[in-house]
Image (cartoon, rainbow, N blue to C red; front, side, top):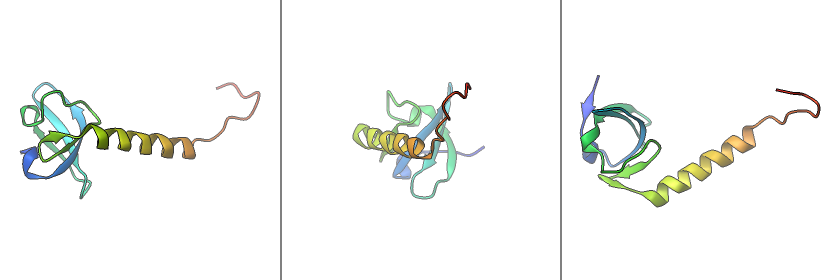
Length: 84
């Protein structure tokens, strides 16, 4: 298990928060790493973008909209009368 300091990386997305650790994904490489939760900014939540140690709410919201748009485009319509 690799534990690193977020501030050294630039931009990361918070994937999973646990009691003392968090999993983040480096946006430039897609590499997932485990970091100390205390190294994240106060109030960080799963899905948040952190750039140079700061939360980026505008970029986080834009990324959430992009993911929602892609998911909607990939969704398969359910034929009428089919009950899932």
